[in-house]
Image (cartoon, rainbow, N blue to C red; front, top):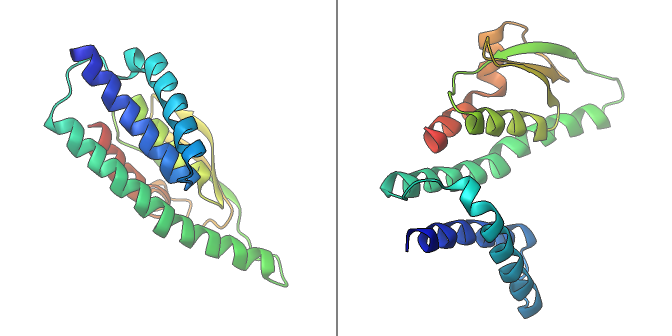
Length: 168
């Protein structure tokens, strides 16, 4: 029964994200998504969930959903706005730099979420990670500071707060 519960949890995560990303509710799309989600869940469940699910997992999932909407609605909008302003400007108004951005999450999942969020945000890209010193090296198209803690405040603080709540 535990294996079935784990499978269903992973399946529902995958299927929910499929529906959100495709935004399609046609019968064909929903059926295809159902089959693909079931296959992916069957293949990945043993690697993703190795313990019983509890209330903490539901809380983490809720934070994941909040993070997703905040990231897509607020953070992406701000970053796109800045990059569009740079692109449409008559003069090239950039201040590129590679800055050190410290992080404090303890899990690889948290670190990956933060690094992926930074890289997916226009104008920033993680170019290296120093796991021993807990630093990301980030190429920033419009660096307003090169001080690590101030760069963290501007680039990744929000991502890190959510990653800590999602992955503990």
